[in-house]
Length: 329
Image 1 (tube, rainbow, N blue to C red):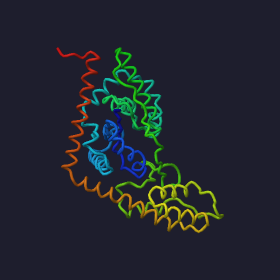
Image 2: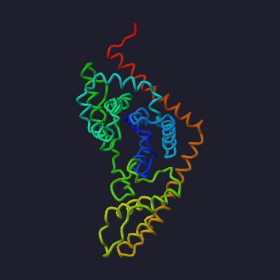
Image 3: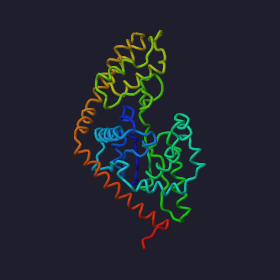
Image 4: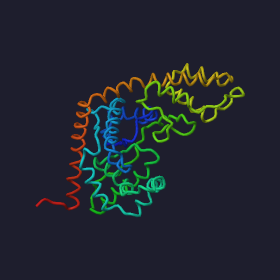
């Protein structure tokens, strides 16, 4: 059984793209593989969150993971900072990570352009911490987006370098997880690209109905088609793509026919789309609110996850220390 690891930074709430994309696959995956899902709160320190924001964000993500259906009794669901073996492996890997390769990392160069006043060591060594997250469980597969593929390649570099330096075959080469099917892509409401946390174009699972209605009514549209069966512009195609995901086939067909006959009223379409999104997200939002109100249960989940994660991580660290040459007298 493959060891699969996936992490999320506590920097925002889960949106429809997360829910209909990777999350649907995670729910299936947790029963088919040895899965580790973690909340990457150490990684978020590169942006210097306040203590209240950090704790609140971690709690929010934990509640959302549970509300979406991740089962802490089946998978290992934990908070990164609850596993001290991770920063120890991070330190050990940093001894064999070189400045040049870290400075050439695309995400590092992009980030320091965006925040030139906060170029910290954590940003430089972000790939090493990500490698520690993956290698601490000797993971085989990692679900990653395009923006993280270089980090995964660097993880393989660090794993292979360790194996060569110490003449062992200890760390496996982790590869990008292939879900076996094309992920559902949920577009944003701004008329371009996919839905995302930082783009301001998303509908979040925790949004209340009024917020969803306001967001959808403000979604980018146009003055409507001028000819029958006219190709849809990107912004309009995005609205129909979301409707295809959340609405009934009859609803989608109705508005598609209205568009193709130049009778579509975007106001009506958006109202329907908003209500269909609300219908999908309300059960999840109510579960999120329930988990957020149950601190005792969240503590129990976090404690269980930490115990399970540390069982794996402590074994790895013990073996790595022995390979390197740290011995007890």
